[in-house]
Image (cartoon, rainbow, N blue to C red; front, side):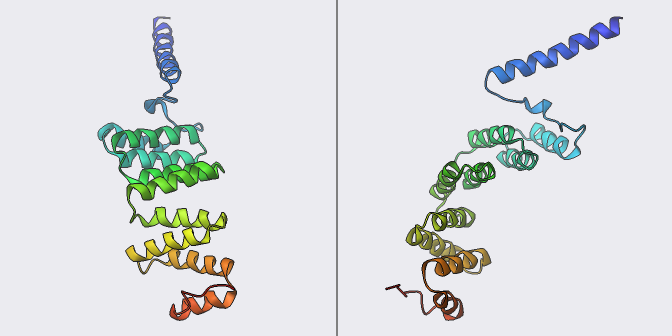
Length: 193
């Protein structure tokens, strides 16, 4: 009977901790993040990495990516907010927040986070590409072209930049302009009349 009482008291302590953490806006306490389908070795290793190096923002990004892949968006967003608390100058964190919003089909917040990523580092190619891709969807072709050109200044051999630039020219201009641009880049100044 005593063991049962000890187990109940221990369980109540864990539940109380979770309730206080959640009531204070913390969501699921990090030490209680486990798979809903039983033990999860990946999540356990990510939690351990955070315990070992709690000041490393990259661990929070890694756990956030994993949690978002399991559709645990609220927990993933909290991890990204913790990462921002550790180093708010990292463009990568804003890009990941944008990706998280994009996965939830929140284009407005995704776009805002992508733009913040390039505000923090105007040579951050993934942020430039993501921002340009949304600008293309919004028909802001000139702005998209600017972001893509900026990305090419940093990484001239990035195939993703060329893909979006070709997509932009195909959307904005006749098809031959895109073809010509890919061949010799001589048609870059072509304007539709």
